[in-house]
Image (cartoon, rainbow over all chains, first blue to last red; front, side, top):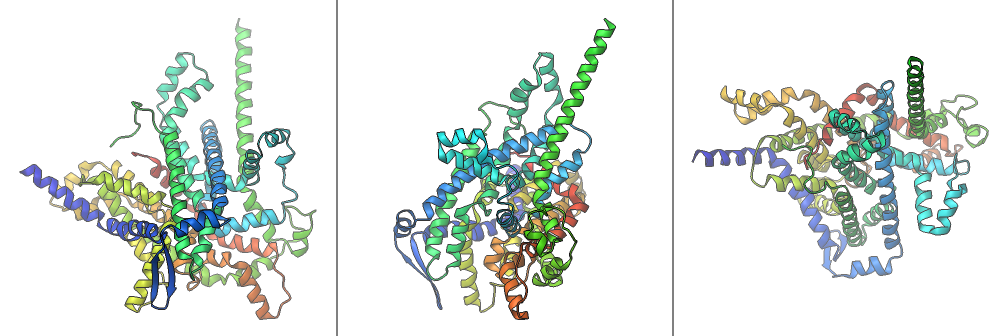
Length: 295
Length: 308
């Protein structure tokens, strides 16, 4: 009886604290999410009396995939941007965090520099920087990657792969700007690894390279998962994503575009979630592996 | 024997110094890549129209000119838009702090039914791309505005409402920061207060909140910065009714043209004006960062302690 009472009490208090968030989630996240699904099958027209929504079935999808010449290439472009960029961002931020762990002097200063972009990065600032770098320094870029021998080899082998490479290299500064948060996450996780594990490995005559692959990296998987999700979410709503800008223009077109915009947005969010799911699966803990944190 | 050992030590020492030097060199190169866009902004800000197009001038302008800054601050409508941005971001940050603390407290302290489900929903709210939510949100607010005969679009009300109800910019991250921090506060303190007769609300306000002042500040700063930089939701719901610094920067080209034509021409838009405007737009955040950079990093560290 007493047990039942305390449980009811916990429910009541828990939900009392949760109430604002749950209300907001239902009204401003779950409902819009489902409404977009419905709208994606409709045509929406803004009239003086309000919105006129008529069910049109698969027409929007038909238009988006078969008639529109921009949408499908934009989806492909998004994938060829987000996959390599996430990979590069994770690897680079791990390397930076790992190196920062090996030095003492100047560590705080470097960390401050690497985190600065997180503070100032916004759509308008990014687009100003991107436009200025293409407008002026486009001709005098320090390292023109297309001149490299290795690039020529890749280009002969597969053109799309080569274009992915140039994409990564040409935007290296702006891609690096996304590493701020992953770096801090990795530094924090590296500090949490129990030093006695390293010692035990050294006693068993493991060298630094083996320790890195057998001890450090497996332990970083959970944090890499979080960092990957963070990165994909941020890339998904950045100006790097062509679909994102496409949806924005479609949303701005109030005369009849909202239904199409909903279709675009819905397909796009499925794609983003699929990419996140992929990252989640790749970086998941092997079954039976120790979990690092449990309430 | 002794000598040999000495040589070995020297070699090891030399190797250590060398690898340290390599690490520093690499980190400095990476720092250069990080700062290059910012250095470009700063150097172009002080260039005059000739320096900008002169290929011989790359970093250091021939003569330092402040006209770019003056022009840019006029186009950005400076004191006005800066104060608006500060007020707007602070308001939203305050709302987000309150709701995130409450939600984080629920996740940290209570075993309510469907807790795991709601936690999944919290993460889902983070990964859903904003465009998929914004179309119905916009329609909801315009419909409500028609129905209630008050103006919502163009005012901060929709975003304040969303922030108060925990659906603001990166709300999930802020909630996770609080949850993880509250998990570190010993429950013994709650229990002691309860024995003294405090109810849950009193425990929350008088024990937990008092111990979390530093985290509250961290969350406020992160939220402030993210709301400042957030332009998509604001552009959809507020549009240009409130002059905010990032939006002014976004519309810089057209603003510049209209201002010039109003004055009768004579000026031409160039890269230097744009870079000066960009510098003005990021400067308040950079100044803030210089003073409280530890807090920002601490906040992200707290968000990363994952249980999921």
